[in-house]
Picture: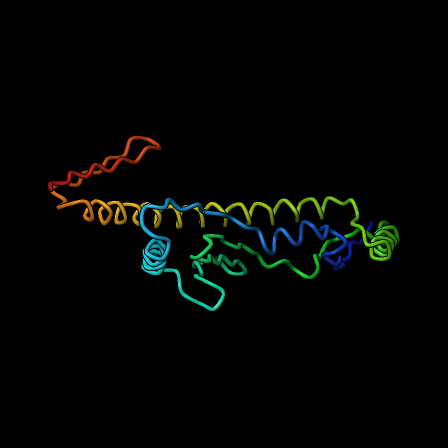
Length: 185
């Protein structure tokens, strides 16, 4: 009967440096329509994101996220940096017969600066990529909802500069969002 042992494999042996860098600093960009001057748009965006639960830090506005996840947006550039905590090592179970081979693979990979081909590394990469995808979708939904409100307010303010706003109606049809503003002069 074969015994199995738990061993820890360093993360640099399972995930490439490129993959680790992407998971620690994936970037999303949110282009903003120039309805009002940039300073006014930034102030509206900041106010909406803070009202949506973001909090302000020296790095930017931080979105509430799960444990080990970060999502920080810079309202000036509208670039959001996402990151997830990458473990330093992954614990796996190895049968006694494979222990020597696995240790040799890890030793060679560490010496050469490469990754080993293993189901553990593939599974870990898929799991972390899925976590980053979920975080990106959540971040995009939060920021897009705030931008929708910002655009609504910016359009009303811009219309108010043209004259007296007499009526505002909004409708949503699938992926199209319409705002109709009637201005009386």
